[in-house]
Length: 243
Image (tube, rainbow, N blue to C red):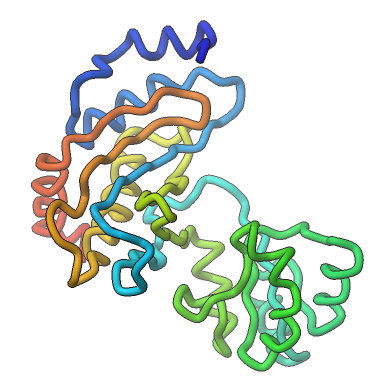
């Protein structure tokens, strides 16, 4: 693949064959952001699991301490009282079955996250073909199917993100913006990586976290030294930054 001039310049600013500490990688990734827009910080983690087996899934949610750096549009599908509660908590849109019909009939998708109360899932379930491919289908495992809509809305607005291992055994997610200070980037990454480590399936054998790479939307990937990463997480726990 032929790379652009800015990409090639970014690669020259570090050693692509070296694995760096998370602190170093956070500084490098900020330096390699060359696009005209505020690029996302992209985290890629290769795990030693077989996602074909239900007991080797790694999935959950985690609150980024420094936020996502982007405005998250939250839709809540609930009855009248819960919809009102959601709007008061900061939801951008809220409604009942009429919202489901709007999505179904008009292909209206002007939202980034969807929360639904359990009683509304009989309606929301009909939207599987539209929501599923976009990763928007509510799921009780990640707290988006809940009767407690207000806390769920506030969590998403504050920077809660979902991580999930894909069919190839890889977790990929955005963990902030290139405009963040390097230390804030590092703190977000530390929290996510700690959550992924804690989510290790009990039946997983061998090396669990095999490879960690961090990069920007348009930039190259910087390898993170997994052994140094574990030490960084242990140090963060001593300072109570991590639970």
